[in-house]
Image 1 (cartoon, rainbow, N blue to C red):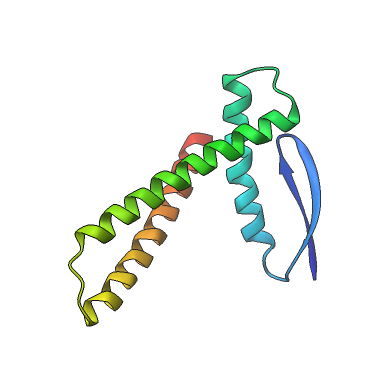
Image 2: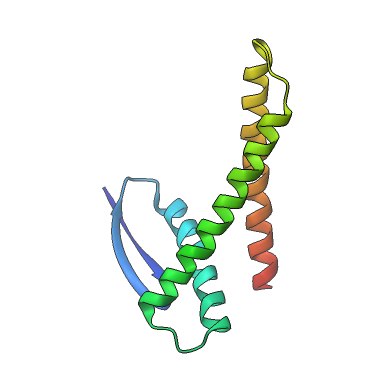
Length: 111
């Protein structure tokens, strides 16, 4: 089992994870940290708990929007038999593309 330290809202959190998951957890922590920074900038003086609450709400809102978008795409796809496997593959690719877009946007925002 591996151990890594995540920095979120200015605090360090030592956590254990499976070997090899450190980079992925670091990436997730960066997403949370970015949202926490937005919360702190838009509402100065937030407590740590409220900062993390707003970061979680921002992320939940984005997730909800993505789920609605995926659901809308699914209802517009005519599927029968073999088409369903193709649709799943396309949705998986769309998810990967969205993650790449988020990473690029995060890097652009930092620059």
